[in-house]
Length: 582
Image (cartoon, rainbow, N blue to C red; front, side, top):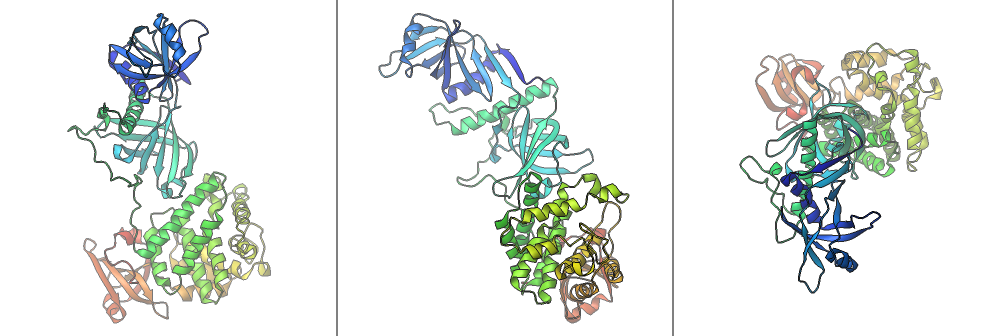
């Protein structure tokens, strides 16, 4: 399709569909048909379909004389970004009105429309009830999204931040299905144009551009855009002649969808996540997703928000530390990068607190750890998804993500540069000099840098990667303890002693076949309270038992932590008592 298109409309119903918005908005321009004629603002005051128009020229009374003389003219207005021009019109009579100058005119024989593709975006409200199904690839799951606006050229979608962080500009869209209340369905294809956050950093806004459409689909899209604007005008209309609702937004039984209560925002409420601690942690995860999108769009680190969420980590990790460690499991639907950032921040703060670091240092550790990996979004996707290990050329790109985040946090005036340099700059360094970005070794790596390297690598090893499966926690422990030339052995032993081989939040298996979420540990880092949810010997029978102290003996010998996905489990589906009692 070209950038603009001109169409002459003769069919009666189609003419009315274009005249109606002009009449509702009122303002049009009048121009006489002779060459060089200027245009003048007038009011389209009334329309009698197929019979006459009424125009009000009170704002420009000088137009009355040429109109009464019979000079031919046309009206021009804008509808949804299209320029609408009537065929030549003539005055039929001047209406008797002492306060206004009004004329009854002939009804147009045809209308001419000139529109630019995508110049007008019709806004949607939630109560219009348009369902949206976004599929990015043929075998990909459907992404939940809301349609914010629609045009001939594209649309704006609102979606969860967690679903948007993996999107990239120019990414193809396999299918975007729009389902209207009257059961009309429109399927579109295209690609992502941009990804950003809303002003509150609570939702992602994804701009999409459509591919070329078959003529029937293009007409249907144009019809939908016009009907959306018509419905919006109907809702805002205050005249004595109420506009009939668009059939596109009526159910097959002819009913309108219920309107939300006055004053209630159309924004979908956030899904309830876990317990109180988990819901607070969810807000930190939302911040990380939004911050990642901001950085991808050339933005900076939000110093205020980072400070606020670092304070949240510190506050939640005090006397209620086990509730915080447990709540991390509720966020398993978040992007892996966000889960990793939260785990590293929470466990690093917990470990540092046990060693007596002051609150100011703990906050700087929390903040630095939360954002330490956000720069990876700037790395080529094939580098992060390589199944064959990294080439030398790819390895040379890795330091870039550390430098990028280090530069961004420099604007956080409250954040200690020394602590940020250790936590962000040295998390990937190794004592033997084999790390990056600088390849420093030995005494050049600070105490917090040594600590964060242990916390980071243990969590990273226990997550699957494109080139390997996830390691068990015991295997990860053996690695850091056995690589004393690369990792500080003191911090590795402290980590194992504090979190144990079945940490709070892990799924433990017992010799009886019992599977239970670990909720508390004793002084020897062994489970002292668990939530039993399944017996592997009877997988169809879900359980909901909280057991503590001597009651644990009935479960048999503790065999260790297992992967929840192996048994189709997550904290979100584990029963009513899956939260640590607060």
